[in-house]
Image (cartoon, rainbow, N blue to C red; front, side, top):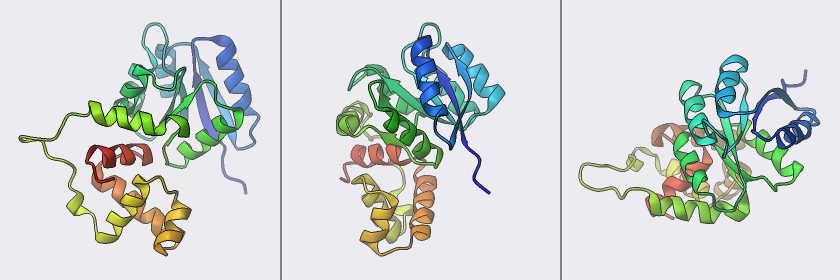
Length: 220
């Protein structure tokens, strides 16, 4: 019996863009577009009604924009993953998306293959940022992050076991689970267990936020 398809909500105020992305995603056997929305307000309502696995969210829309809509959706439904679509390599609005709980960033110029791959990756629990903007996005976010000091304490890295710390460093350098498995001589199942425990202990949603945390704490 094949697994259930990934349920996707597409939110974009431009009808042709929205329909185009929906057609691309619906053409994949393992992805199903369950709803479309033309505004942030509609996106929030449809997320509540349809409970998709993934929301494809345009960042700039009239009324409630993509960032505010992402914040409301992820706050109300932590299990829903959001992919932010941006127009430019470094979009000022995109930085707020991380704080709002987005798990992925893609350029609107991305290929259909990159879009479907991102949906699958995010649905599996990982985060993704298009490679050409990853380093710049992380650097800019780290520069904007408030420096820890006074009574502000960084996440308790000392709660990680030595092996979890090794896995965290591997995640921070951009390695995938199979690559971590090969490098640290661990089974795939063990790596997945370590990754889940690291996310829980450090309070991060996914790989994107783990990498940003590592850069912010200057451990890579």
